[in-house]
Image (cartoon, rainbow, N blue to C red; front, top):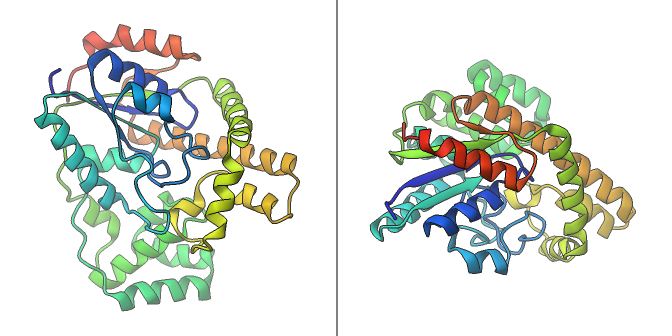
Length: 308
């Protein structure tokens, strides 16, 4: 045990959790979550979080620890993850940070600037403007002052669109420019990214969604829906929640809901892979289409993997 930090990124269903667990068992390491949806409590099945068997094999951190009513930002995750990593290091253990949220890895390795506090009235005005203008016009307005944010924020992500605009409205500076002034939170990390063949990845996405339904995803979504939370909260946007909730309301048959959720999962995996190709182009790739193959590629690469 050396206090080494491993980073393992990849699209949903790509095999990254299995790789992280195998590495943690081999090195006596502890696993730290870098998936924005696996943070939330009560959604273990629908977000493919670690179950009792996995948590018994290695210590896990920041999985299922946040109430869905409490929407975490990238900055909040970064502070929590940095504290966890520091504690792991003090104890002389290795850490494996694993997940599919690219912005988390970017914040960890490149830094996240301290954004000035936004007054409540600026947040309220941004939300009202979004309602009044609609997403397309709101995004177009944002593009005039922060084109990079307007381009990178996914369709339907009201929270991040409003955040980008309210920061500009309050500070006069584009959020993108402010974020470039950050300092990396960790040093000496070693990374790999999983990029398996797309047909294999999509087949795994489809199969896993069906397994989720059989293992209790509907119960999780029903419990979440019963809380009547703000639909703009991050947890409410977990892949599969919207489609299964529609089934529970009688708007979709279960087969149709599963098919819709499978399609959305494939789209999400594609967006993740595209982001990682652009933002993690220098990370070594594991391209095998099996857990055993990915581990074999990792072992072959490992001697040449050195901290940046």
